[in-house]
Amino acid sequence: MANVIDLKKELYNALQDSSEIVSYNAKLRDKYEKQEKKINRERGQWDRDRKKWSKKLGGANTEIQKLRTHDLELIKETRRLQIENARKDISLAKSKAKHATKLGEIKSLRNEMKLLKGKLDLSQKDSSKKGSEIDSLKSKIVELALKISKLERLKPEDISGSIIGGDDEKNTLCEEQSSITKPDDISAVNEYSKNLKKINSNMCLESKIRGFATDTSSAILTYTNDEITELSKNNTKISPKLENNSRSSAKAHMSSLIESNSQIPIGGIGAIPAVASTLMSPLSYILLALLIIAIIWFVRCTWNIGRLKEPGFKGSPYSPLRNKKVIGYGICRSDNRLSI
Image (cartoon, rainbow, N blue to C red; front, side, top):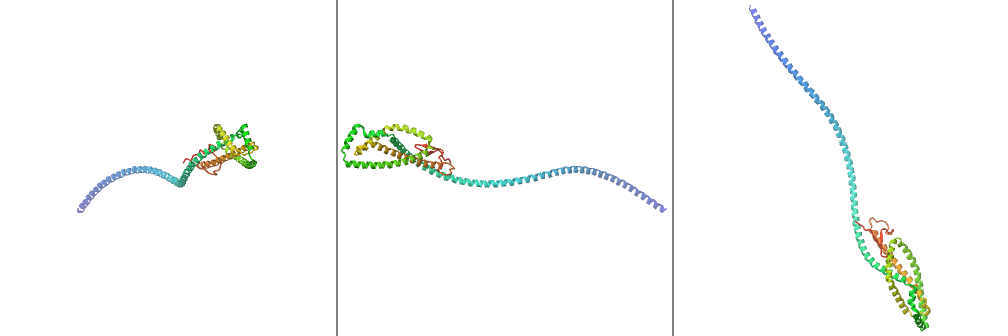
């Protein structure tokens, strides 16, 4: 009996334990289901999150590709900019070298300008001095031209008329010559022969001066063709006013010569007009030669001054005249002015 009771107790305990086990199993099963549902929910959330992250990763990959392409473009741009910078540096170095050379040229040009200004001042001073000399020599040339015109207008007929002075003067001269002694006649003849020798030498000089005058006048007329007409007009305006005075002065001079040379024999009176005419022509040619020499000298002086004033003048100062105007009797003036 005691064994049966013990068995019943053990069965009862076993049943209680099994019920407890069943309840525990139910509880565990509920927990498992809850946990499984929770895990499923979390798994679904994880799947959704994974899809989102995958989408984001895909966008990030596209962005990465875009960034890579942009990086490549930036690399190319930086290389291009580096090449351009190198070229600009080279051009800058070249421009600096050119600038340095230009500065040197500017300095040299400034020095040349200073030298040219000094030369210009000196040339202006010289030109002012030459201008005063030219004015004084113009007046001298005008006087010489007037004297030449006077001497050229003296005709042999006027000279012979002033010397002989009509029939009354011939008779008086014949009476005076008849009273002259023979030694006086001989001395007069000797003086007359000496005068003839001088006249012959003057004629030789005249021929030389004529050749020189033709050469120099042909050289000057090539440069002064237009201005000579004006000079001739001026001479024609001046010469009629002075013609009467020149003739009267020439007659008075020849009459004084007759009075001083009253011892000439009667046979020489007829030759006096020819001698006087031969004396007048060499004198006129001598004055003409002096006039031409003065003209050539002033042409050379003024021409050299004008050529020095011209900018960029190179070469011989004896090259042909350019841009010159004739003033007075063959004197040249330069129209060029040096402007700095």
